[in-house]
Length: 266
Ligand SMILES: Nc1ncnc2c1ncn2[C@@H]1O[C@H](COP(=O)(O)OP(=O)(O)O)[C@@H](O)[C@H]1O
Ligand SMILES: [Mg+2]
Image (tube, rainbow, N blue to C red):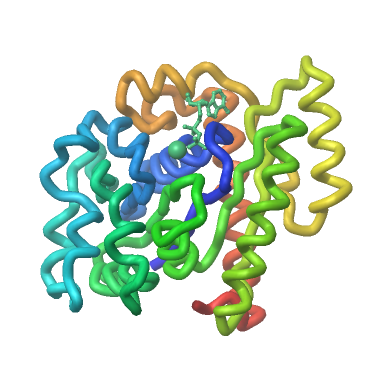
């Protein structure tokens, strides 16, 4: 099972879009895919027309046990309308976890342990994480083998990236192996100087961990979210979906490389 998390301590940079688009493409290829929503805002949950304020089963349930019951993670899987794609929803109650649980030991591994119980059920898990450093982001980073950091091609977003790098360094100090990560330029608009110059800046500063291409602005992403479909189901030929296909191939090659080098194991 391949577990990838999408994270950045900034909102509106394309995290949820990245998770749902990659998941959709993988599901179209016949992979069994799980989308895990760890953001209390529940954008991914809303994307598939579930209500984070009222959802019956959610990842919140995983945090309510000292030892996670074996059958619990599988019982929380929701349909998305795509046979190969399941969702584990976020509920707004997740926002209260920080206060309730942060003092309890072992809480950082709840998601990792839950995914271990779904090992034979899925080929890929994509985790969408919240834009704040806390228990949920810690869980996402502890559970994944590859981290995708979307960054909007705009100056303020690049400043925000430095904060995410500090978080990653902190996490890596607690891990046996450093977590491999990939910075992905998003919302690229080739007609604007801001996009062109920020992409140049990213290439200069993050060259070796940067996705070699970028994700363009494409209005089809919004259309897909309105329709509640993974973008590849709405329009597989769109520019945006094409760019995510290139990213997927990049990530798969990178993961294979990481494994061949014997590092990156959680
Ligand atoms: N490449 C893109 N082109 C056009 N709109 C995009 C693109 N990526 C994301 N969006 C839109 O931008 C908004 C924020 O994206 P989202 O993925 O929700 O960001 P985050 O999860 O980081 O907050 C959403 O309305 C989404 O549809
Ligand atoms: Mg989001």
